[in-house]
Image (cartoon, rainbow, N blue to C red):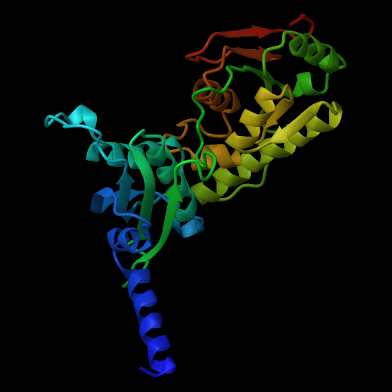
Length: 314
């Protein structure tokens, strides 16, 4: 066979495998034969995507997952507890979809793969995810991960510390006692997250609800930067990853709410204009040990809540 023909055959085979089911890719790339389990054509409806037109709407997403598993060392005795159950695959998908709103299929695939690889029997996993409603075609990604190959890619908040959430009124932000309050709160050793509402200056107004929500959230973030500018110990953070790192490393945070609020699967019912209700939701989502309000009345909250006046110690 001429080299060009051989090259063409090899290229054709590579292309075939590129679009083949993950089970074929697993078989073609395995060094030794392995046992596998698979989840085929599992379709869920979810809000996902980085584009604005993908927010606030559900779209169908299809999962195909193949897991190479360690061989059983003895008779399984028809006992489901001795195998990697198919339910663990769908649970891994569901857990990651409900953890937070995700923009990228690549992120979701990596998190699902890592979660599956936590299972003792799992050795290598192939994950293919496709969007089915973006046109007369499917758009997707496919990844392969092996046990021990990569650190956890997902957002695992189970071990995150329980912070103290402190809401500062605008009067408190401008108070000469601000640094004194922060000194006292920081001295407790409990992770500290500061929250604010919008500044007293009115925000721009629009008749479009989604646009107004973003404007109101950005107004809060502007005020967060005002607070950070008053005390250099304060760092404005907007993602859960940044928050987790800061809380574990003793960094005082000021919450910029846009990303966490907009990406939340079960987002707050409170409007950004009701800053205290929004902060109460945030405190609950972080499993805060306390919500402290300085210079305003305490909101109704599911975490321990107290309020102090502008002249009171913390």
